[in-house]
Image (cartoon, rainbow, N blue to C red; front, side, top):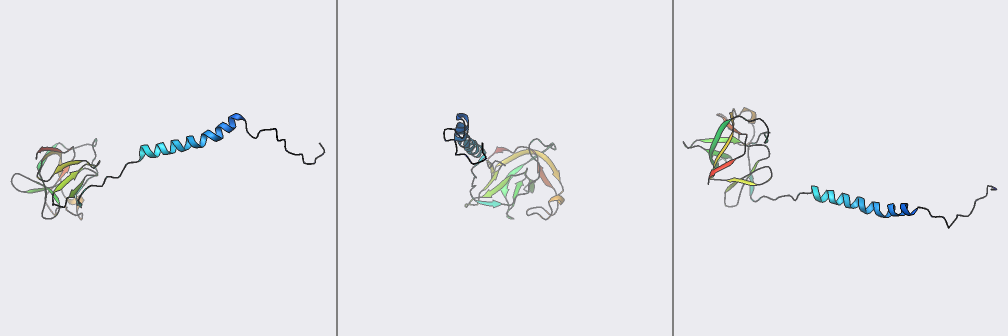
Length: 164
């Protein structure tokens, strides 16, 4: 060699057969994995009917420790626009629902209570039974629908509709 530039060897391949196969197969494979992951993890947003109703909630989730008190009453939307459990004597108990529970009022004024997965679990007028405990409303002071005095019912179980 004399140090001068040589013309390229046009008979020589830039990649081996395996290299060409990798260049052709890997990008579509990566795209398929990415779109498959996106499809598997994508959840359509559920649009619940009606207007949101203020609801006191706690951080309690299934599997957490729970008090053993029995809580019950008829689910109702009070004059104050808050969700209550009406007791047999006519008094109203303010429930503090598990984490991520929501409530909505439809156009006709009816109330529906939803679990964290947006499943309807109760409607106004339903007799409910659940476990939990009772507490001072102090930790909820300042939140909409928190009572000024008395007790709140801490719902710490699944909600069971006893009778509609």
